[in-house]
Length: 353
Image (cartoon, rainbow, N blue to C red):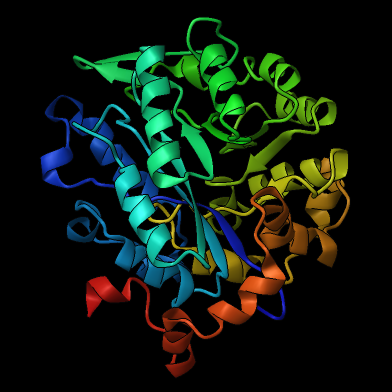
């Protein structure tokens, strides 16, 4: 917590960018991902940038857990498994890594499983396995599949893959689905990151709570319209939150229009750790208000403390069913709280000891 404010990081995913998992046919994209990481921080926070030898590795959850809960005042987090994103040779964040950390620290985290095959029967079999063996709390989907160095996009309203897959997970009791959208990552086809495929599944599966990951980073007008029509849509503000440091005018436009035209009740703080470190984002948003010139320019209302509390933790607590009253006393006595009580470690402390 920070100043009594609950903080939940809605996207945490240590990437495996080790040389062994890099696709030789996609090295420009591998380098672009690291460049994007560096661009998440302003000069004052340059010490949060991972050096190449720190970034290009299979990052462990020990490193990420320390960054979240000891180096930062994060109370709880949601771990997102990731399939092959095209610039890897295999999955970027294995579900097995996520479940191991979740099982070690069940009071701190929830975890999402994932699938990476265009064959719907195989995808259903795999997610069934993760439900049965791991007890996943939700599903993370990437809008493209990769095989033979080919990226095949798919639509969330598609009848051949997405609809039967969503039908299965709904019957299996999974009611949280996060989909990477808005932020294009090569070598996936650009059209896969559009959001014109959300409306139908939002209406067709009203009991599933969908998260648009990177929501607002593009297609802002269309995103607002979807939020206004569909109460089961949430925005996970990974990437957008880094704009508070590096693109403050854009951050004000996106967040200001969202809270003015929709409200703050379905907006979720997310760092995307390890692509960003949560601490500078949290500190920058501490008591944050829009500059008067941005309020005037974009016709937005000012942030309130309730908005900040909603975004930083209260919304995620409701969405992910964190029993905050029961869990806070327990995490106050865990190893991360003990480390923090002795003095807040420096960024990426386990990598730099």
